[in-house]
Amino acid sequence: MAVDFETEIKQLRSTMASVREVTDLEQLQTRITQLETEVSAPGLWDDVENAQQMTSSLSRMKAEHDKVTGMDARVGDLEALIELGREEGGEEGAALLEEAERDLAALRRAVTQLEVRTLLNGEYDEREAVVTIRSGAGGVDAADFAEMLMRMYLRWAERHDYPTTVLDTSYAEEAGLKSATFEVKVPYAFGTLAVEAGTHRLVRISPFDNQGRRQTSFAAVEVIPLTESTDAIEIPENDLKIDVFRSSGPGGQSVNTTDSAVRMTHIPTGTVVSMQNEKSQIQNRAAALRVLQSRLLLLKQAEEAAERKEMAGDVKASWGDQMRSYVLHPYQMVKDLRTGHEVGSASSVLDGEIDDFIDAGIRWKRGQEKDDS
Image (cartoon, rainbow, N blue to C red; front, side, top):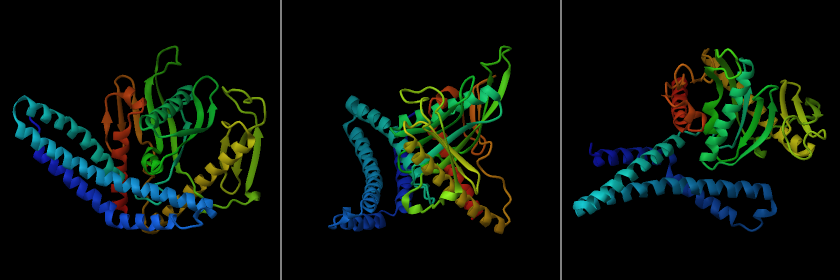
């Protein structure tokens, strides 16, 4: 079937018009100009922390501006290629139109991703993310599932060239993980991955059951924004209980030989954070404090949101619970129970191909927020 280039181009331009409206390029350019003036001022680096924040903000704004204008240029280039192919005719013209068809497919994906990105306008959406995975009901299968999920997210990050840092891994006795925590160190990681938070369910023939029975197991995914110094989450020393112990599980030199692992408990809330992947107790202590501050920040935000919902009479359950099923037997399917998005290749999803689930989740979440407002 021949591609209807006119309809496709019209749709791309319509989507880009929405992106430009949400992005507000004129206002964005004004802010970029202001920041460029500020960062060029003498004495900027007298306050290193402030200077780093300003230059980082400027870099993000420029990247956002260039991404939108660059996508507009790509749509224009595609239009020119289609026109040239039609003018040339013959074999050469057909080759150009084939190239245009390939470019269209790639551009359609890029514009869709950019459109989804414009939906990430929550208070902490532009932050880096801290992801924690915990095994739930299901015994050793649940621990194995937790490890499968961790690999899935790390493979997803690797596919996008997003840097990650594993902060803590607690290994289960027989196989898999009791829990694991890692950072995704890229802007908008929190807004992107926040829709992955909740209970994940796996159905398969258990490789740990010698009778080959089908097993259902669960794992929980928590996603929190990485705190910044401006968040001012102060934690009094008296509110902290800090325990040190030896790291467990596989490791290299200096692991399992010293009390370098740290368990930090926030006494008022009972929030517990453990870190053991760094080599020194000081590094693990700093990482634990950073994650604890992030969790307390999200807890504060959740409490404020709960208060607003209570005043509005909203008694709906949290949107993130029991959010996705991974079925490996008697058939293969991964289905998001909130958005209805599903695919038949569970192996590709578990290998990190989750962008379509994330995009659908972001659109669904924003729709929920509009309904609640």
